Image (cartoon, rainbow, N blue to C red):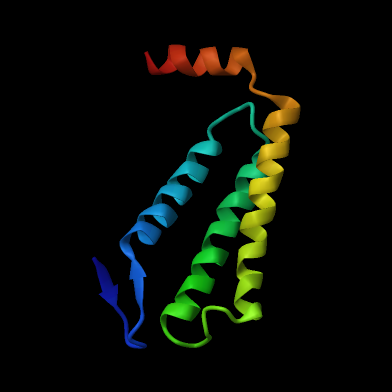
Length: 105
């Protein structure tokens, strides 16, 4: 099920859920002490930029396969690459994880 917009195009439900879940996921990163704050902040900034690109297409201001619209995905892609490299290089802080477990218990 999807909601139609004035341009006659629709954003699929799975994309709406994915965007919402992604932003909530990034907001939880801010509270994780073992993850760099700048990395969390860059993801929180990249999410709305990506949503802006979706809205431009959804309201018919640009075509979906326009190369300029692809530029809106670059910050999110860079964030995801940086997050992957950060987690591989640094791993997780066992003390921070156990402190969060104790705090939530």
